[in-house]
Image 1 (cartoon, helix red, strand yellow):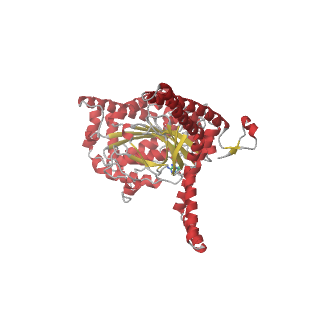
Image 2 (cartoon, each protein chain N blue to C red; image 1 turned 90 degrees about the horizontal axis):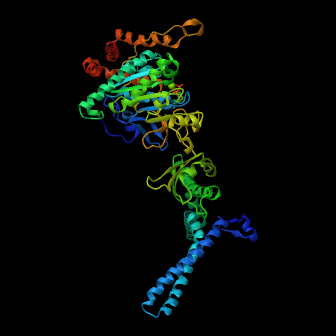
Image 3 (tube, rainbow over the protein chains, first blue to last red; image 1 turned 30 degrees about the vertical axis):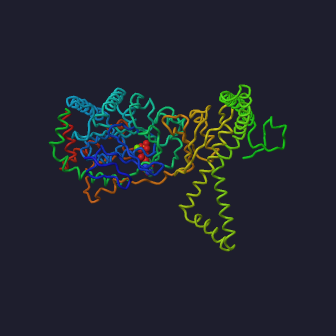
Amino acid sequence: MTTTVPTSAAAVPVGPGLSMFDPLFIGIDEFGQPVYLDVIYRNILIAGEPGGGKSGLVNNICGHGALSDNTRLVLLDAKLVELGPWRDIADAFIGPDIDEAISVLRRLLIVATNRYTWLLANRRRKLVPGDGMSVIVTIIDELAMFSTVLGTKQQQEEFAALLRGLVSLGRACGMPVVAATQRPSWDIIPASLRDLFGYRAAFRCTSLNSSNIILGQGWAEQGYTASDISPTNQGAAYLLAEGGVPRRIKAAYLTDNDIYSIADYAAWIRRPTTGVPAGSRTDWEIAA
Amino acid sequence: MSKSSPRRFGGKSTGTVTVIEAKVHRSSARNAKMAFILTAVIVGLLAAVVAASYWHPIVALIVGALIGVPTGAAAWLLVRVWPVLRLLWWWTPETFLGVGLLTCWVQLANHTPTVVTLLVVALLVGVPAVIRPVRRQVIAWTWCLIVRHRLRVCFAQFIIANQSGSLPLILWSRPTPVGERVWVYLRPGLSAKDLEGRLDKIAVTCHASTVLIERASENNAAYLRFDIKRREVLTATVGSPLVDVIDPAAPVSASPLTVPTALDLPDIDAPTITLPTQGKPATKKPATSANGSKPAASPSSDTDDVSDWI
Ligand SMILES: Nc1ncnc2c1ncn2[C@@H]1O[C@H](COP(=O)(O)OP(=O)(O)OP(=O)(O)O)[C@@H](O)[C@H]1O
Ligand SMILES: [Mg+2]
């Protein structure tokens, strides 16, 4: 079910009829205009210094996903508290456990491959809303924990390789990835993984270099640097999405209370649909 | 923008006030000469050719010269006064504004008693000064006027353009919530890349915080847009519309968690401090206990998934 693009923040159509194919409200820009993302066909990398507001943005996306029709959430959060409120409605909620993270990524990759086979059989190249297939949003907060801290070196590499596979395959089959980390330099996540994320959100950084790492080489020289964001202005970021030029935005903020109310409501409205195991089971059975 | 000539070649005429910079002046003189010769020769020859079909060739030549020389002189004059014309163009909005205001004032003063005049002026000045949005608009547009001149100062003072010293055309400007946006048409000798290295200096000259340059046209690299930023507007907290559509009366769904009791450093023995093993029971437990306590669907799909995988 799709709705038309709303004109103002006040008129954003949300509720049970929401879909991941709808533009996702994430905040306002410097002209006071609402900023929307279409996460569905893109992957977004969110980075910035600690306390910059990354998890705030991640929770916005998560909230939209939670209230969306036919959407599955796969949440990986090494910090537990940022995505923890959504654990009851998530298909998988993984804390600081790299084994589980790897296993869920493997499953997601199999689903992706199967979906492409299905698309091939249907003589198509891309999933569209009418397909009735669920959108599986993978949201990872504190990506660096999985790629550098938890598990053995080998596991970390496997995690990064699987994630790279999912990021590169997921785009056209309705399996977008949202990842947040503090500094996505090559020693934290491989450059080959970083460069696959189409959209970037750079929250405050301490140096031009860090900002360049997030947004891409050369933007700081042109004046687009997240180091000019005031440290007290949490939630302000440069968003590199449609248009090709970074835009200064302020992310919408959900308080803890808001997050839990939305999560409760989402669990409540999801009850009848996900309560029928048949529907959800077939999707996974097609996949497996 | 008259200024005394500080240049070496202006030294002879110390004390005189030059309106046009020496470099521009010299190149303008050279250009004017070229314009005179070219126009005079071309127009003269054309006129002579046309005249030759009516009169004797020698007469035609004289007629051609008679037509060519004044036309060349006109071209010379145009090129010569061009810098002044450009200067007038730069100050057009201010000139019109000034003339308009002065005319209004004189008309008002002539047609009304002094008290009424002062009252009207007080109202016209006071009301915008008191009403905040109006005052803001006035200040924003004033900045638009100022910033065009500041940008021109940038180009004239430290952005070396080309040999003839021609400056980019500074087109219109308009206020934005963060500052101003000015459209500029570059002349040969400059590119957006050249300007990018000097953004900080431009910001200083414009009394702004930062300046960004973007291409205003996909097809024309000379047409640029300067975004001058002097205010941070993104400081307020933005609410999410998701909050407005949910029903706050929805039942609480949080599954109970087994909270670890070892919450202080001494509670944890040296060998067991690895983070993953600490986190595992805290995360895995809720899913299973939720299944036990609640018939809610999502936790059950979680189990589906796990069993599918195993
Ligand atoms: N959009 C926002 N508007 C206003 N305040 C915000 C916004 N986003 C975050 N904040 C404030 O900043 C604090 C830190 O935000 P958040 O936890 O999202 O940072 P983070 O970047 O995820 O940090 P970390 O790297 O430590 O995870 C929040 O507790 C909140 O007070
Ligand atoms: Mg965080």
